[in-house]
Image (cartoon, rainbow, N blue to C red):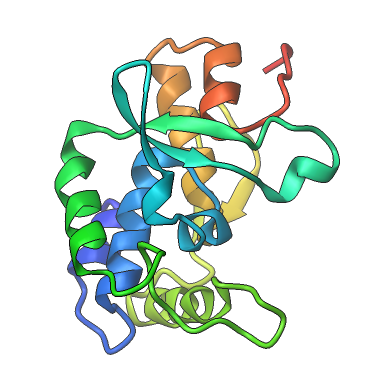
Length: 173
């Protein structure tokens, strides 16, 4: 069964509207959880006549500037983004508690881990690709790998995949 479907369809006290929205945004953008929690209303922009989420900074910026990127908003994601903009009472799309270090994603990340356990996905071994020999454990960051694998199978070249996911270009992949 599809782990994402299980995550979205299994009721638990941990699956809040913010967590559900974050999972969906991650599926369509490959963004990191902290990036998703840091999306401001003003980061929804039109770039070359395409509605996008602009990520102004990323955790990898200290190494390279590829984390700064525009991600086109998929048509299936438009309604959710519009709803989050309308319903948010702050500048951010995802309103959750900020920890004492200023991280916006800490509590949502913990909630994701607890929800995953409730869904029976905790420490479940899954291949991220039929091509991969490595077995990985599912965590929130796995959405990035899954999206990259999907792009690869769809024939999207490495340069475009790297630009969409904010990775430094590795021409060997």
